[in-house]
Image (cartoon, rainbow over all chains, first blue to last red):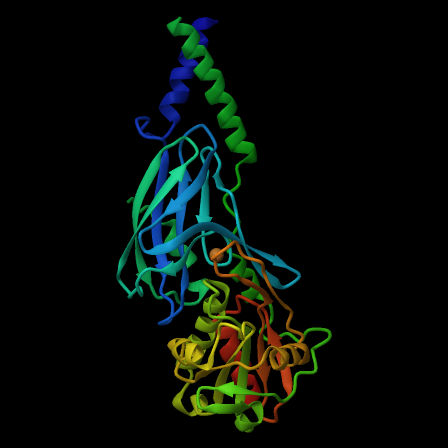
Length: 159
Length: 206
Ligand SMILES: [Cu+2]
């Protein structure tokens, strides 16, 4: 019986996709910051965060030298009224991914320290509830209308 | 000991695989796609009255009536808005730039601020044309804005902010379509793609 189980466990291990167990399992893909008009004091950073670990993770903090205040936000659509609200954290389920995207979760940059130009790279530090940190550089992009975009988020680009 | 760990991991992996097979669902598709499935410019059961208004534009007073003979798209938002307003205005701007020159000459975009305290005409002058040169930003007194918003069924509410932090403004996000006679014809839902806007404009030009 024991042998069967051992065999089974080895078999299961072999069928799992290769994963690096050394890191915390968090990967950030396709980060970008929305290019906003001159003088606009706020913008959002978007990205896809995936969690290949066996534990749920939460993004609990974002920081960037590009803005005086950096917050985690989401949008709620309540009967057509768009409400932007700070959130304490953004969860990434074990083995899952969470999209930070227009109209939804975003890293909100408030009071930019200098105007952002298309192509600038915005450094952002993301801190997770296990104490790990990811440093990313999010390029400033002019966002065309939403429907043209989401496909790009499915690419396997690693940063 | 080693075998126990292996057995335990086998069980955990087994449970995980079963869970993945039965319960894992890929993240929901973008809400914007849902909006694009709506018929472009589907008339809401009860369209607000709409109608003329006069506010302050980049070169002084600006009235909707100044655009008679053109199709006008009106959007209500504010410049501190990091996401919702830029999304809607980008779609409007993209739609305008995809029109033929002749069609372009027959349209205009108006961005009405629901945050008149911060959105001065100067702020709006730098903001609105970023999305397309044919979009102008207009503002007015708190009362003027409230009146125009009421005409168009726009709901907005300034939010409290922590000390020293800028406040945000909750607001509805429709793009209002005004025909050449000044009549409100449709309200396009948030997330309407440029093509839906173009279709609307072309339908009205027929
Ligand atoms: Cu925000």
